[in-house]
Image (tube, rainbow, N blue to C red; front, side, top):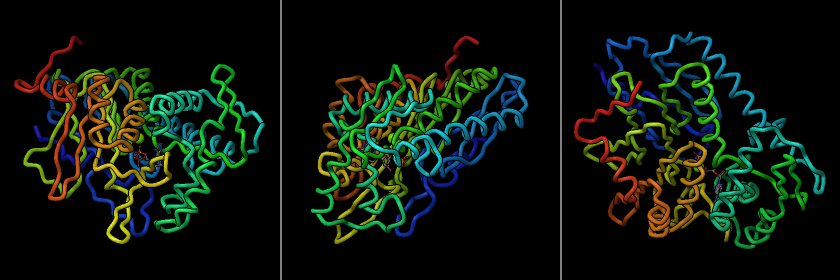
Length: 364
Ligand code: ADP
Ligand code: MG
């Protein structure tokens, strides 16, 4: 019974490393506490690289060839990148970004699913979650070739109209995407990774691995249970400088988890900290004191989008929203002299459910 190292499932960084961006090692970590149940004997694990980070999957009680499954996963990821990647010039989303106004583009089912979620979260968040921020991300040096820097206020103001998502006409039924201004560009980074996790989980399920844990860059989805019948258990990401005596964990039974943090990509200028999640209302990095937001939801895409949205809000507002909607949310709040953990009721309940025996016995 050797507990797998918590570092094991998190290798690499969410983006190719950039100068002057400090990226502490700790991201989302998954714990496999009992990988050696003699009864199952078929626990398998595969891994690879994608989206500037790593992916991994583990499963049991299915007689699947790991090499075959890894190839199938790679093929699916390649398909997703061809559609959703902002880092590939020839992807569907990049072609849309380079395209002209008033020329409808027919999109794939994958892009349709991501756009539906993005549009829904945009409306739900009253614009706090916005996939049209690329010009501002470049201005702040978080994307593109420039170094992170604070742009002039006038530059930020001049870019805001280009990030107006109401200039996007999305007809989901017809799967048609049209922009009303040439300059509109979509950046799916805040939820594409989550969608890819869901897609890989679907693939595993279809292949017969009904008990699995799959992860890309620290965003995870769990189905079924561990070899010993207990829920999959996942460690919550935290800044390296937050040294908790015990690693906080969440049991996941047919649920997904995502974390968005301001300590993975940021720069400091004149004593002020600027992180890569922007407040679309003013075009500046979000100013909340939340260092990270972890969300448990039914799908990884939902968790991914929610985690980013919550990072834009004040810590109190994020917590109030979580309470109001019964979302399972774990926030790490930055204080002058350290950090404070803020959990929603639903998160507390979820974490308490499997405490004690730590064992659940869902029917096989
Ligand atoms: P990561 O992709 O770094 O794991 P997130 O899921 O939080 O973390 O996504 C952050 C990315 O989302 C940023 O790099 C940027 O491309 C984009 N983004 C920044 N601010 C917002 C926002 N307010 N709404 C939607 N997307 C955003
Ligand atoms: Mg996100």
